[in-house]
Structure formats: structure tokens, C-alpha cells
Image 1 (cartoon, rainbow, N blue to C red):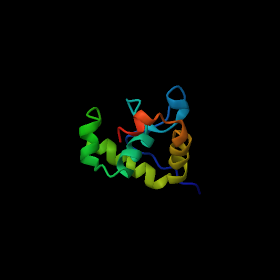
Image 2: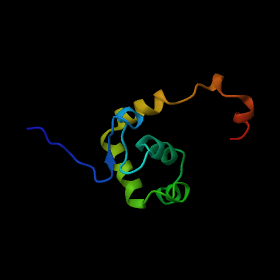
Image 3: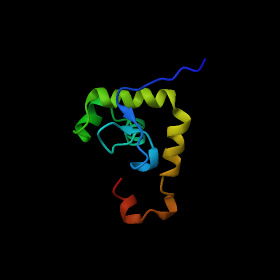
Image 4: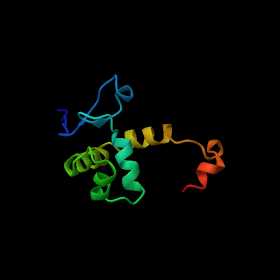
Length: 94
């Protein structure tokens, strides 16, 4: 028997990011939240940086990520700009 899990805040819409998981009612991808979290930004700080989200939505995205790591990591890899294509002026902003 296959168990289908539903996530309160995460959805997919083909017309938004080609079906990549997003926070329902927004265009914010789970990937974007995970990237901030991986950069050391706490869920509470993520809400400060993305004030249209609630803390529950951020934790919902991280919960989704914990169950779908391979998929979200694939989206992260596909959307990472190679170092050699980043303008040196932008690199200095880090």
C-alpha cells in the first residue's frame, strides 16, 4: 500500500516554476527557503527576509525538504550559476 503524504503549505502548479514545489499562494519555491536555511539563516530570520511568509510556512518547506531531499537538491543544482559565469563585481559583493 502506497502512503501519500500531504503538506499543509507546499503545492505544485505547472504554470509556476514548471511544477517545482512552492509555498501555496506564493511563487516562493521550497528550494529558495532551503538555500537560505543551508546558508545558516534561521527559520525566524527567513521570515524577516521573506515577510510574506509565516514561520509555519518556512517550517513546512523544511519538512517537505526533509522528505524530498533528492528532488530539492536537484532543483538547487539546476539553478546554481557556475562560478566562471558570475561577474567579478558581483562576486565581490559576497
